Image 1 (cartoon, helix red, strand yellow):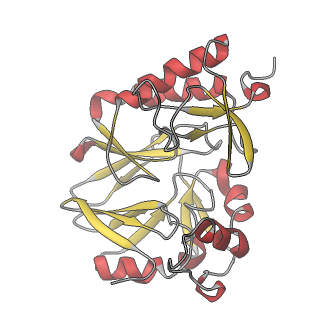
Image 2 (cartoon, helix red, strand yellow):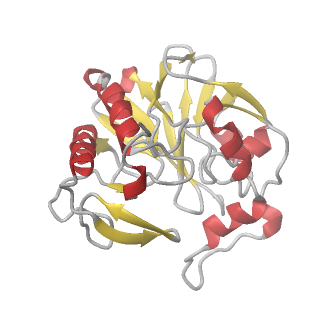
Length: 277
């Protein structure tokens, strides 16, 4: 029993691991080696926890460089990441920033880690991973799909054997754009069209937050929202989140559930809708 992590199998050879901030990562085991998709926040030893789950050699690959996905990079000392997000990995690696992520908003009586539990910042050997790259684990292969939007280097990983994508924050009920590291809505639409070209190969997405599988129709819904945002016909619902003011394409309840019952939502700013002409 870990104070820092939870784990449960979503498939026979795939374990979903949760961190203290509600962030998720995925351990996929093949016959010869294992792939750890994302590294949570880097509080507590994820490397030691993973070693309890598998004896296979493990390679860490990131969907993107944000604070809640790249923390274990500083424990492993090496990771695969899209080159567009390498600077972001270090920017979000500050231990105080990672500690704040998992402790903010904690209810009274909840377990709180110490600063000593935060994996310290260090130099990381970053190996490139790009659209189309494949990871042969022995009996199962994962394929990287580039989905720039939430960050410029965002990737999803296609698991054809399970008809599943491990999507990080690429497309979800609260897809945050208009961050300093994000693309425009116009570029994100093109990313989603590329993502959608793989939809015959998968049925569900497992993301970086929220433990359940999300049906692939969320991608088509997000494409519809991109068109509406660019046409100015979306809800333009104002909402502050994580200290930033956004417009959301669709109004929603307090738990980010759209009032019309659909799944996808996009947070953006008017000045980051279109590419520069």
